[in-house]
Image 1 (spheres, rainbow, N blue to C red):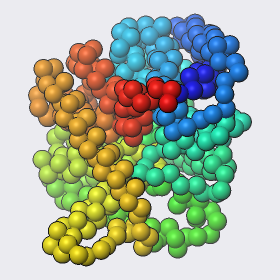
Image 2 (cartoon, one colour):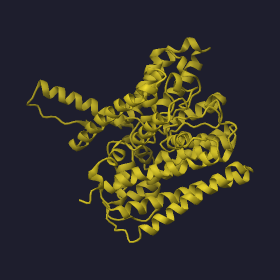
Image 3 (cartoon, helix red, strand yellow):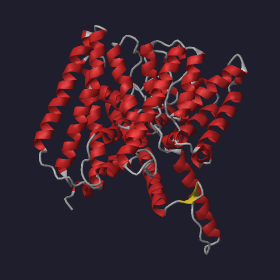
Length: 482
């Protein structure tokens, strides 16, 4: 294990986060918010001090970088980033409990959107900006941004980091160089965020709200800047946000293919077709299931479209209290909490590509049980899927189920009711935001104990980092010198 290389990497993360905090500090000064200025200054100072100390301690680090260093850097980087990110909330006194502040910070960076807050309208706008910005930088990944901007960190540095942080069963390159791939991804991400912001402004959303909501949509996060969330805005604004939630649930490589003129490849993409089909069926069923609760079929369709987009993309915004919907509609939303949208997007959940592979692998194995001599392969987009990727998906699924069960048992003594407890775990682990009942769209997670919040914090990080980087922290093989 190359400890100095890991320490050097964490130092870079702390320094970058100090830079990220500067716009929030400038907003605090511009808006005249002294209750936010000093907490932000102290946080920037702590981040720079930590970065400087680690840079001094890791001078002369070997430029050797392997898979286990990548896993350790990603998990430790996200933990340090979340610890620094929670300090403005804690120092300002807006969230007096450090565990609660850390929960909010982790929820932001992992683009979960679960919250312990019941009121945010009175918050300083600079802190609300920082809270929403954590979604944006966490959506595409701060380490992907580092790859796009920083010089090479040694042999294997770029691929191991991107493989450890990027969502999906496998990591592909849009262009031969990983650094150029990271830059393309962030350019597309930035352009779509800017486009949504402009459209929200045209729909007469205030500038500050438009920027923060665009951050939350792009990162598929879900933090709002008003107490009522998206329910406080016009149907036009809700529709724009709804469309962009679906857009950010698409694999970003599809947008790259569109830019280079390969639109037919996008239309033939199997994951895209499954994503659209699942969404369309869910919207149709829910629309007719809830039509009695709303004035018109059009209004039912608008709410169904928005909430399906919000949940399948794991954004977590809400325009209505779906706690009041019929059980069938709630069950469909919970199903989408598990599937998520596309790999290579900013969404959480299992990802549609894994769902496809699991179902096709199941069909293949059943056929082989019936006809043992038959040789067949799993194909996605007409290409054979490597058996190593299928093994990785099966391992992921096993870990996924185990973490859900263990988390459920750990939270059991603290659950207000079974539905609230189970959906709280599902919402955090899949980076959704709201669950059902107590943790529904009109509720929050403040009622859980500190221990339960720490379990949910682990679930959020494990879900965002695709489980393995977090589990690697507990393996002796990760820290061994061999």
